Amino acid sequence: MFVFERTLEGVQEAFLDQAVNAANLGAAAAGGLSLWSLFLQAAIVVKLVMMGLVVSSVIVWAIIFDKIVPIRRVNRQASDFEERFWAGGSLEDLYESDGAKPIHPMAAVFGAAMGEWRRSSRITGIDLVHGGVQDRVNRAMSITITREMDRLNRWLIFVATIGPVAPFIGLFGTVWGIMHAFGSIAAMHNTNLSVVAPGISEALFATAIGLVTAIPAVIAYNVIGNSLGVFEDRLDAFGTEFAAILSRQSEERG
Image: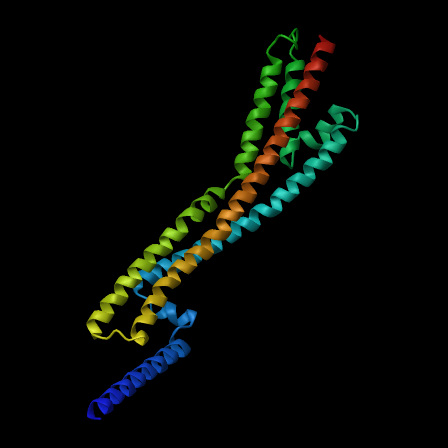
């Protein structure tokens, strides 16, 4: 009978300990595990990691919006320009209206080629077919396409870098936070969940921020990079077609 009573008392104490631990954990979760409190309670290194990731995320989103609008605009401008180009009007008139002072990439490519061809055609006694004019026109268009694409790709390297790097930065914050949490546990000589959970939560919060930063960056880089690649192919195709037209006109004049 005595043994049974002692066993019953032990079970009751275990249940009481679990109840206390659960209550402590619930109180910690209710009052101390909000996102803001996790940031405030984190170690200084983890805080720096979190702030760096948040700043990087803001910059990434700024670049995303800065790229989406220009890409749509240059595609729309290119479509309008191609309609007028293939309408059969005078290339000289089109150069004066769009090519001389281009405001979008396709007009810049047209203006570079047309300008070089006009300058070459004014040279007295030049052979437009065999005088190297076509090579200069092609080179002018190639340089212009490269320059315009460099302008459109500006700052995209930051998005390409943050995408794969951000999770590792967050993981570094998590590892550091867990080290700090275990150090605090060892100092307190207490392994209750109410003591362990906040430190682990702070550490994992850094990884969560890293993923939130990286996922949009990776998606945006792939989408924007593909859109810019398609637009560059469009400029190359236009340049090839326009070079053929200028070559034919050179042969007719020659």
